[in-house]
Image (cartoon, rainbow, N blue to C red):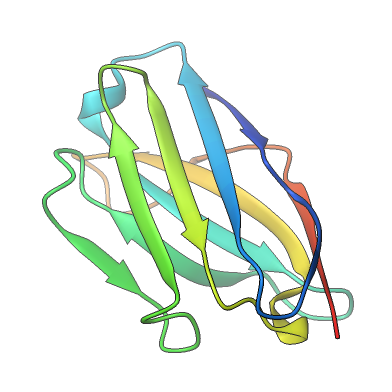
Length: 119
C-alpha cells in the first residue's frame, strides 16, 4: 500500500501561485510514477501532470502547460506541483496519485486538496 497526503491548497487571486505537496509513505517512492489530477464541481476528474519515477520525464495537460511544473524529491518521498499564473478555471480539488512503474495505471490516490482561484 502507498499512502498519499496532499497539502498546500488554498485561496489565491487570479495570477497568483501555489505549490502543492504530496507526501508518500508505505512503499519505495522511487518505484512509482506520480501524477496530479483535478476535479471541479460538476466535472469529471481530469489529468493535470505526471512525472516518471526518476523524475526525468514529465508530461502536462495542454491547459496547464507553461504555467504548472511537476517535480519530485525521492529523498523526501514527496511530489510537488508548482502552479503559477493561476486562473479561475483552475479552481478544483487537486489529487495526487501514484502508479508502480510495472503498471500502466495510477492505483493509489490521496484525499485531495482544494484550490480556489478568485477573479
